[in-house]
Length: 225
Image (cartoon, rainbow, N blue to C red; front, side, top):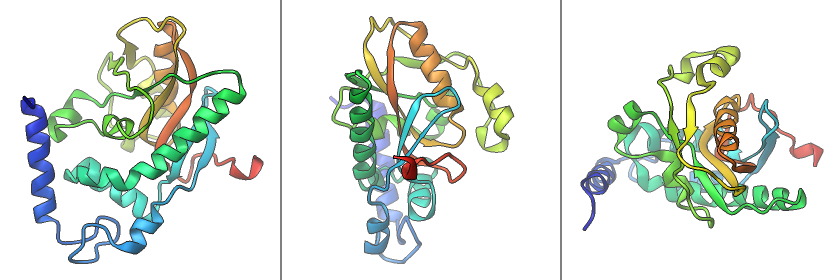
């Protein structure tokens, strides 16, 4: 039998679909996602690294329709749009797996970064988990929040690093298991680095990190490949 939480999430998705009168990517009326915006969500891999050196792969830059669709998923309950983001997330995951393999690391699972309790109460779902479910690797919900943090959107780079430092912990030992960290969006990479720290402390190996989109300020090394 479906859980109450799953039923609530389904209800929100149905309501968002019924009330949707415009494209989630550009606002065009009478369509959930128009053809040009759907095309703009095709994979366009951004390759970089976090300040802590974790290899990072984003499905797309966090601009245009990709940014707007992610905001609709995160803030307006349009979880049905996750499917439109799936090809980019899968492509980024494949790049991350290939890169890790070239370094002698075989990624065995994907670990979504947890959202805050307040965000989960507000939304009723966790966006990184919705995205992780589209990756062809087992999902491990092993990370949890260790303390409250401020809203990252209001902070500069240095403040973001301080805000998330020590904010996550792993709930069990990894025994050397190599994993990919997954989040929806990255700006500075601070959250990914704290997730990597928490996982390493419990014996996990970090194969890399995957996000649906990276903000323009994130270092793009596509031309360096």
